[in-house]
Length: 334
Ligand code: UDP
Ligand code: MG
Image (cartoon, rainbow, N blue to C red):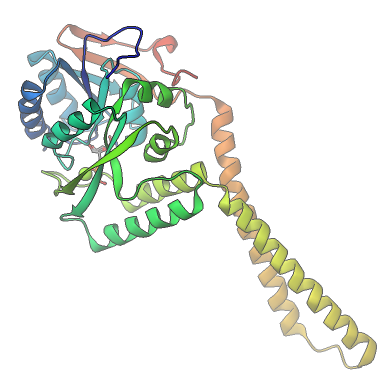
């Protein structure tokens, strides 16, 4: 692959691994990953992206970067969230093929062999698809299932089912993603959106090797709404439908009331129905304003044009660089 590129990079494989508070798993990760790096058929680099860890994770990563020149650490100035940490890594990669994986060994490094084989076959995006999810709660599995089925109904792009962020992508795909400057990053949707030749490898997702999930319900909901709002305007159209239906109902009821007023007497009763209708209509109003508000909020975030993330420090075998000049603040090439 990379046959059509102007300039071939000296690095074949780049690994992008975001982590936050993962000191418990990082040593195991380095061990498994080193074994893989020794095994694969080209020069490789690992970009560990510290997403504002509060534990010793960044220290462990920096030590690893000084021990093994293939490892590099990029530290973000605070916690920006998993999807943005991945983006920061993608902005720095040099390889012709880029592998994105979690730090907790739920994305088994050994699967990369299969992904590389598919890449050599000419595929440009290889998604790792989960056959089974060990040790995840019933709730997480059910909600993920409902979410992915729902999203694929709502959205105009075909977002593959049971696929997380573990995938191999080619250099041209990375450049396509870098050209997408949106703030609310739902990477699995973005990777589906860019097209290219896509395929899957399947695996049984193991439990995380140590530590606890960094995706509490609140963050999962945020990610889910990024997915829906970023890839569908169905909620806005739904607001239109609800509005139309309620208006039709109101017109029908208006006609009924007018007829009663014209042809009967004793219309003074009806306080209950008035209150119920008023309450219902204000509810619908608020709901629809809320839906519109979700989209407006995102427009607001986009309009501010802030950088997606700020890199505070880079560590590699060559040394430690502190970075704070605005020109080093990546703008996702925007
Ligand atoms: N992560 C991150 N920033 C965050 C949350 C998570 O970089 O704000 C990393 C985390 O360290 C891990 C990966 O994202 O490497 C996936 O998170 P986790 O394993 O907690 O999610 P789960 O597998 O439970 O969905
Ligand atoms: Mg995990």
